[in-house]
Amino acid sequence: MAILQVDSLKKSFGKNEVLKGISLSLEEGQVMSIIGSSGSGKTTLLRCINFLETADSGQIFVDGDVIFDGEDKSKHKAKETREKQLKIGLVFQQFNLFPQYNVFDNVTLAVKLKAKEREDYKGNKKQILKEIDENAKKILAEMGLSDKMEAYPWQLSGGQQQRVAIARALALEPKILFFDEPTSALDPELTIEVLKVIKELRNMGRTMVVVTHEMEFARNVSDKVIFMADGIIEEEGCPTDVFDHPKSEKTKAFLAKSFE
Amino acid sequence: MFWNVTVSLLEGFMTTLELFCLTLIFAIPLGLIISFGSMSKIFPIKWISKTVVWVIRGTPLMLQLIVVFYGPELIAGWIGELGIDNALFNALAGMKGLDRFPSVLLAFVINYACYFSEIYRGGIESIPKGQYEACQVLGMTKSQTFFRVVLLQVVKRIVPPMGNEIITLVKDTSLARTIAVYEIIWNAQKFIKNGGLLWPLIYAGAFYLIFNGLLTVIFSRIEKKMDYFKA
Image 1 (cartoon, each protein chain N blue to C red):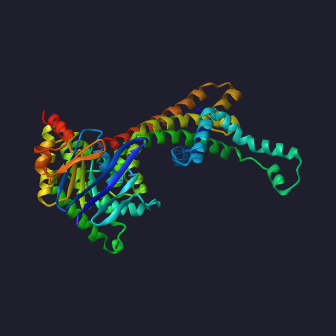
Image 2: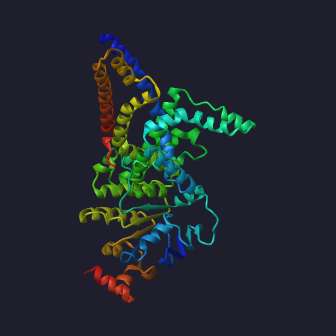
Image 3: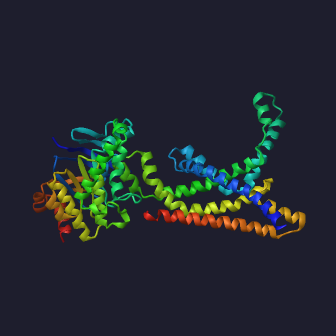
C-alpha cells in the first residue's frame, strides 16, 4: 500500500486555479522529486499536503489514514490537525530556524512540548527527556553537527542551518519528509553539502518528497519524478523516462531550458 | 534651605515614582490585550480596539486626566437633572468619581497601554511568517508558538521603542499636577509661589535626568542581554 496517496487535489487562490486536480502516490522508502518552472503549482501542492494551505477539494492519505478530505466540510479540531501534521515533516527553503534557540534546542523544542501531552509524562519525566536528548544527539551526529550543538543559527553557514532544519524535522519521526526547494537559498558549494545529506537519508530508507530545481540531483536520487506545469502533472515516471525519454512537449521544453 | 527643598522634592519624587511604577505594571499587560484586539480577526473587537487607540492617541493626556477625574460627577449631574426617579437612575446620579491619585493612574494606564499596544503590534507583525509555519509543521499549538518562539523575538525588537516610550512616561508624570496630585514639579513650583525661588525647579529637573539616565543604562543592558541571537 502506498504511504502517500493524493487524489484529485484542487486549489484556487481567488480566480487563479493553481492546482487543477493532482493525483499521485508514493511507496514507503521511495524518493519523489517534483520539478517544474515557478508558478507550476509545485510549492502549493507541498503546502497543501503540509496543511499550510487548505486545498479546496480532493483527498490526501498517509499510511492509509485520511489526513485531508475536501468533502468533509466540518471544522477540524486544532488538536486533530496537529496529530495528522506530525505524520509528515517539512523542510523549508528559508530554513526557518528559531533564532533565539541554539542548535540543540531548535531540534528538541517541539519534541519536548509534544512529550508533555503523554500520559506517563509526569511519572517518567526524567527518562523521557533523556531519551529525547539522546535521540537529538544521534540525529545531529548523523547530520554532522555534533560540534555545533551549542551554536545559534546566525553563527552557522546556510548549509549547516539547513542541516539543522532537517534534524529538527527528523526529531519528530515523520513518516514522510518533504523538502521545499531546500537548496534554493544556498550557494553552489553549500547546495552540494545539503544534497549529500538528502542522499544519505535516502540510503537509510527515508521516504521523501523533494521540490527542487536541481535536475542532476533529481535524476540521481529519485525513484519517481513528477513534472508539473500549469497546475497539473504533465509527466511522471522513473528518472530515466522523464529525463531521457520525455513524451510531453512541455517537459522537453522545460528540460532543454534547465540543461542549457 | 537646600535641605528643605531636597526633602520636599524627594517626597514629590516618591509620588512620581509610584505613578511611574504602577502605570508600567498595569499598562504593559493591558497593552498586550489591546494589541491582540487590534490584530483580531473578529471585526467588532478589532474595530473597538482601533477606535480606542485612535481616541487615546489622538487627544492630549492632560485632557484625559481631567475627563477621568471630573467626568463621572459631571455625567452624574446631567443624569440628576433629567429627574427620572428609579433605582438605576438614582444610582447613576449619585455616581462619584475616583480620588485624585487613582484617577491619574487610570488615565495613565489607559493612555500608555494604547501606545504600548501599537509597539507590540508592530513587533508581532514584523516576525516572519516562516516562524509560524515552522511551528505549525512541527505540531506546536498556537500558544506554544507565541510564548515559546515568537514572544522573545518580539521582545528583542520592541526593547528600543519601549525604552523610548518609558522615558517619556517618566516626564509625563508631571502632568499629574493638573489635578493637584503632588508630584515633584508641583512641590518645586511651591517654592516659586512661596519664596520666589526658581532653582528648586531646575533641581527637580536633575531628578528626572538622573532617573532617566538609570533607565537608559537598564535598557541598554537588556538590549545587550539579547545580543546572543539575531532576529
